[in-house]
Image 1: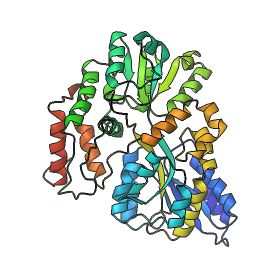
Image 2 (image 1 turned 120 degrees about the vertical axis):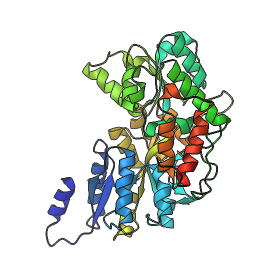
Image 3 (image 1 turned 90 degrees about the vertical axis):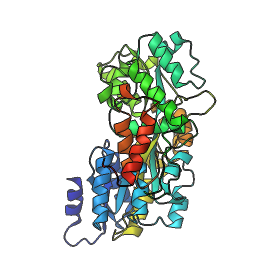
Image 4 (image 1 turned 45 degrees about the vertical axis):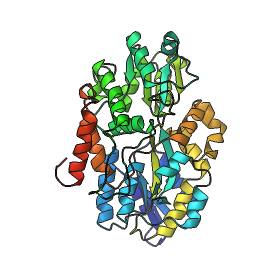
Length: 416
């Protein structure tokens, strides 16, 4: 509706170029930025927004189909990092001009920069970044004798939950969040799911059937076997695991920064105990072993321009406006999505609203993207199917079966 209003307001005689920005659902922040940058453009262009589906796989499907059909309306696209290699490899993205790349990545955090690139080339512009951290109930950590100022391991928080008869907040649903979890566990051991990201479908090899893959499966299987994810773990997504964590039997949780604002809002309105936020602490993502730093999941959104856009130069001008550190700060404060710019974290409003901002920033510097490959969709779907339900994950068989499954699918010998 807003996009239609913007077009109508131009008038029949107004020949101002209109840029369509395909956005993922948020709390209105991208629409506000579209309006702001339209005003600042002073007639050079107008930005109208078009809303994509709620979940990332559906967003990818819609954009890929439009791009493959040569749709010229895809001026600006909000893209989930895992799907960028597929679109770049297919030639669906307009090249990022060198001067734009230089200006928009001067202080980009390392994890976000990695997620914006393919084959060591910047193919999208970092907008906002995201990562998971470890949220914990201070009372539970204290009872367990854990020093949360130091890194903790998955085994330590699992043991603490068992000893105190508590639940862990994890995402056990058969969805993208399972790929996020499995990938983070493997990356946290200094390994990667894919051996060579640039390999063709016939030559691509995965690294699930390895010590790192079996260790990851051991953690998932133990949580499932012990019932630590709660009775509804098979349908536990990010929001449901937050609700579980907020209850009296909550203990530790891996999740995105949105949970802080959501928990405080619920406490203020009275649907949660008003003292609950005082019992919540935060720490870096858990380690798999105490000798290897954890690699937290990388999320966020990058901005790309469609290869068939009729206004690529104007689209990149608009993107430069959208991703200024000031706008990234505003987007974090209003929508809860962290900046990809290091300097954006320096705004005092961020620390006031998100006291764990430093932990988020540190996590983003070491965050690891999900497998970067044009075949990400196939790999992710196999991981989701193979590692759910978590109660059935067996370190002696699940990783090996997933490896074979991926190989068969990519060779055309088996269907998803």
